[in-house]
Image (tube, rainbow, N blue to C red):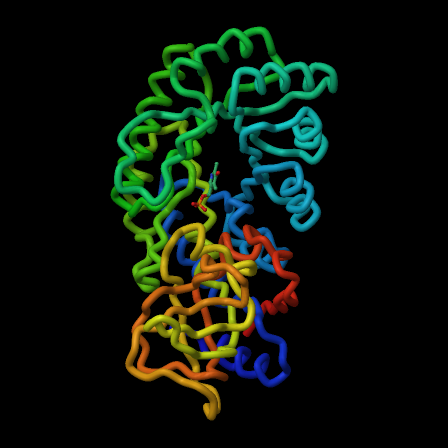
Amino acid sequence: MITRLVEDKAKALATSAELPAFVYDLTALREHAAEVKTALSVPGGPEIFYAAKANPDVPILQALAPYVDGIEVASGGELAHVRETLPDARLAFGGPGKTDRELELALELGVERIHVESPHELARLARIVDAAGQDVDVLLRVNLAGDRSGVALAMIGPFGMDPDLIETCREILTASPRVHLRGIHAHLASGLDASAMVRQSAEILDWGRSWLDKIGHEGPREFNVGGGMAVDYGSPNDRFDWKQYGQDVAALARPGETLRIEPGRSISVYSGWYITDVLDVKQAHGQWYAVVRGGTMHIRTPVTKQHNHPFVALKGSGGGPQVTDQAVTLVGQLCTPKDVFARDVSTESIAVGDLIAFSMAGAYAWNISHHDFLMHPKPTFHYLDA
Ligand SMILES: *Cc1c(COP(=O)(O)O)cnc(C)c1O
């Protein structure tokens, strides 16, 4: 499953002593994004806004731009960065705890939709647009209780408003003619397969339509039903069924409604690789370890998700310690037992000098990691284009 492009690059980087390295296959990213776009391009199909927080690297954003309808940003920092990188992109701005300064920035930089997370935020936004003499379009973010069992991550916490709290927004909206309610936003969970995602989208639509009807909302309506499309690190070839989701969610849309999604992980994760080499192989208290250059300070993903990170081993020239036909734990250079990439994985053999290419490193990897811990050298970064 490693692409020729990435494998050749890995070997070249080993020769030039540039490991560890993050290598991104932009061609593969474009192909994947084009497939997703095609799957969603059915009548009534949702618009797609890429969630920048998954991976906001400039070459990633630029490669994705032709295949997405816009970008979702979750902070003033992301907002400024994405606006500078893609001056014409349509933007949506979500996230809890937006400051006044961030809301002002959203007006200055031409955000198309603000996803409002609380009545207090809505009231502050209303004051800011009044002072600026500007109008703003908002979606109210709702947090529906529902049953989220079986998901990778339920968005339990201060994300959006539960149906009781959202009632408070009615008065604020009535008193604020410059704030235009366009519809409802919800991002309820991560790790849903296509049919579970369709059911969740339907739940949001049902609730949203009836609430908008109840408050007498008129005109076209938008429903942003969030991201969280499943990514399976244990089975990298099982991908979210975009075709089924596209068809089934499009069938839910009614005339006058725009649906929108904002996936991150499922878009960029497959295009990135963290490539390193084995520095040592040894046994400790019966357990075999392979120590690789770098560590989870560069790619925190296996620690946060508590999984075995998928990888491909490429044979080196050998000659050093090795282990054959044993379960091996892959660790990094950090002085903590938590620095584990994969525990007890079976490999035919693993030897000092082998290259280890961790796949699925294109999302929530480098950018969520505690880089400076132990002051090892930073990885090098490479964006490959065929
Ligand atoms: C993180 C996030 C997303 C993207 O989630 P993925 O699991 O990466 O698809 C979308 N919307 C909101 C509000 C988020 O916080």
